[in-house]
Length: 511
Ligand SMILES: NC(=O)C1=CN([C@@H]2O[C@H](COP(=O)(O)OP(=O)(O)OC[C@H]3O[C@@H](n4cnc5c(N)ncnc54)[C@H](O)[C@@H]3O)[C@@H](O)[C@H]2O)[C@@H](O)CC1
Ligand SMILES: Nc1ncnc2c1ncn2[C@@H]1O[C@H](COP(=O)(O)OP(=O)(O)O)[C@@H](O)[C@H]1O
Ligand SMILES: [K+]
Image (tube, rainbow, N blue to C red; front, side, top):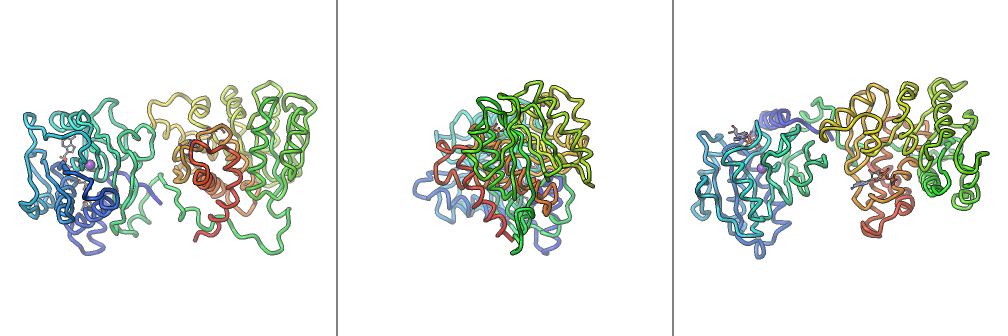
């Protein structure tokens, strides 16, 4: 699924109106119906209390007026408060006229801010994607009044004051919603941590927007949903054998951090690798062999860290980093790996690499190594690791710019991990992941992702970016399946490993 700018969203509305030969008021009615359908599913009339709908002067306010009418018809107690304006949109005026006297309407002024009792349900229909500058004056005072009242806010389309696709000044007035009910497509702003306190939980209703416009729209932003990964894991042929799916090499672990190697190896096996060999420090040999009997093991001559790179000839992909440590000997291994991978003997393509955790930290300390990264190398930093590779970001939008720029400059596939993990491709696309949950914020979850990506990159049937997008999606889905069983607090990384099989199986059945 693609994500659009605010300007493209307006074009999409217009394209829908023309394509379907409907009026803009009819489209607004669909939006209001979709909002009210969600609202009715969430709040029973008996317990909702009197609902206050705050309406601005544009089409977002028009949505609010139409929603107020529909909520009243659905037997909710509703009142409306209008922000004063010199001009109103045509569809606003249309819906103002359709509002019957059964819904009380008041005008808002600085002297008459609406009374809001604590916990009142408030529908925020002040401003939507037409916001052209940060809120100030009366709208900003109203937002502060709303926050002070401790109301439960449901925002229509987007919390008022929040830009859909760009940062705003740090302390500008933005409504803090518990829920945001949007239309057609999610907005980029919903996916960024800095906006979570405004957006709350978000939902997207289908209002029949032009699929043709969406399919042809140009945007660097994508949202990886089930449809985006459908078909990217080909079925196994009846006559396949273990060589068909590639032989992966994992370099992971150090004294005290063998768990990272075990988790990554387990994930690589569950991810479908034909064969897996792990290079672990000498001290990890027994631990590894007992914990992952399916994998082969090449213990390093050093007891505590990995100090020598094995011959890469037998392998189709290499993963390095989980639990590696940052010793000089391991830095030398990383440097050798980058050199050998770029020009692997007898290969037309460079060796597929997955670089994570301490291997990323080593790259951050020795940035000259970034020039050695083979094309389509996968890097999986969390925000702190990414900062070590680049620079501190001013805000989440700036971080996305840095991410996009980094992936393009180094022709790499970079997964910035977290909620809505974002994959940046060498071509400049950003793919936000839809699966996963806060239960995955637990030590070892990232090691599991590395192992899974290693398996998928070793599988020559998958294109590099498709493999990573699928891996990130399936990892999040496995986390969701695990959380279903254990709850979020009780989830541990090994639970994600165990759910990778079911998650991949679901992905391969998607069409
Ligand atoms: N047919 C359509 O176009 C549809 C539009 N929809 C709704 O329409 C919304 C967009 O409507 P509009 O484009 O009218 O825009 P808005 O309703 O977001 O706001 C536009 C109005 O606010 C004023 N304004 C902008 N920034 C301001 C600020 N900082 N301080 C004070 N005033 C400010 C503008 O001058 C204009 O009068 C969407 O978010 C969605 O809720 C939905 O009904 C779906 C269909
Ligand atoms: N709130 C969240 N929602 C979705 N996924 C999350 C969330 N928190 C963490 N994750 C996922 O869990 C993994 C954590 O990786 P990482 O930070 O490297 O942890 P570790 O180093 O402990 O393994 C990432 O894939 C990340 O996307
Ligand atoms: K709004």
